[in-house]
Length: 489
Ligand SMILES: Cc1ncc(COP(=O)(O)O)c(C=O)c1O
Image (tube, rainbow, N blue to C red):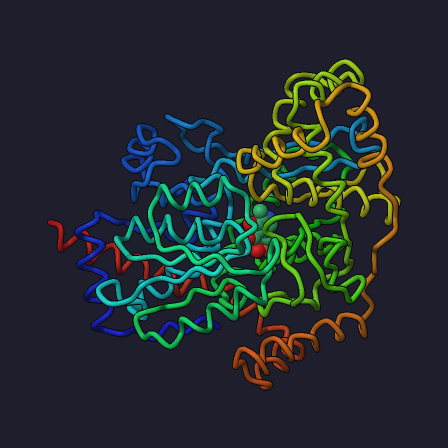
């Protein structure tokens, strides 16, 4: 469980800093159900741009923001993209919830909040002394730096040097110390090695999403609940939730699938990875181009016991589709060639590379389980194409202009051509094998104990205890807000 021991001195500093920066923290109950956010806060949100570095935007770290850059309020049903069967080639419904409408254009700011808030309200992170270190496979550090800025805390972002230009530009603009690691694309191992070096400096507080339980805690409660609400809102008579699929970086998003499995016991949960660096399906290694998706380790926070299927997605498929969905010729083909309507085509830009990979996982899953029009699969679009325009431009430069023939070919090859290859249905011994792989990365290299590793496997309540810590946290958050309020009055 997350350690909630209170450190008095740190807490006193944090209260002072929150009062200075006018920070009020949302509770998990509010993030799960933004209907609980008060009118005064909603009114302020309505006049604050979505991406403004303003503490009020902490109340937007959930899936219910209106799809508006300015003036947005809350909506009951999260924004989502439905992949029409003419596009996917499978009859089952695929719903992908959009991360574009978070303040950083990506849902990872939620995982960052989940990791930071327990440290803040207990005083374990001391805003007067500590700097926040955010090792990231992609967007977690952007979320972390955003939150750090709101709290007036110095931030260090650790990211692989091959991340898209847009991410580096964003980090530069907001202002933070940046350390680019040598690993390719997601290079989780290099990230963690670099992070370890910083640990020697006592002012550096590392918020490691691969190991911090605040990450799955946020996703289980906030992403899981939002996906269940989405399904309930759009399901048609006779339809059932057949499952969910998420590519894993830190493994945090996967815990949303655990809530879905509890609510819909027939649902299956699939983990996706990049074929070019597939650890689970192929015991492989290597580099790949699905930014944000990890490689070469099983994250500490991934509850492998709940994972039913592993799917490796070819990065070439995801990149080709990014181009199809984000070029004039591609969109013209989808409209004229496939007969898709504008409202079906326009939100395709809400899919970043890993979001497309998530949808490809769903398509492969639908074929694997022979799902029909009575089945619904859900997933998330972690970020959007906004962060990958430079990747589209690079493809334009490398392969020349895009046209209708290429668009039709890409659709046939990279979407309709998806097969049931590169999939492993995880049996009990296979799940145990994945769990055991944590020993090397986490016990030998990162100082976790064998006792806790064993507990993760043998004590199902280990994970339940984490997921249900929101009540204890909300009590601390409420008390924190009250004390800040009193000191301002
Ligand atoms: C673009 C992108 N996609 C997918 C992921 C993976 O999500 P998770 O870390 O919750 O497994 C990340 C994580 O950083 C990401 O940035």
